[in-house]
Amino acid sequence: MIGHQSGILKVISINALKVTSIYKVALEEGETLVCGTYSPSGHNFAVGTSFGAIWIGMMKKDPMANTTKYNIFMAKVDTVSHGQLNAVTSI
Image (tube, rainbow, N blue to C red):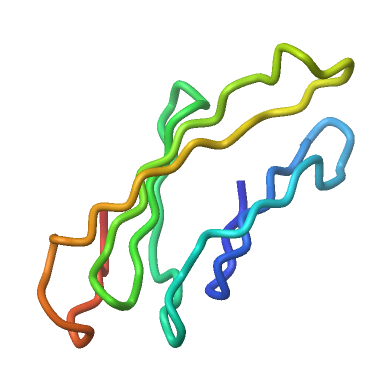
């Protein structure tokens, strides 16, 4: 998984050397992604934003897809810090 500060998350297949999925995090205007972490299980991840929020996510294989597609489920924790001046700098 590769994240861009604009909120784009890309899932990359190393074996095929291509992007398999692209997702967009619903950031507020002026907010950017600043850090992230990925669990060893290969399913869970989290990203921090410049406004002090943390997005916790889970990738789950889509049982209705004929190919290997994933659904991403995300929840926003926005009470980590107050105001828009405190970025989450590490997770």
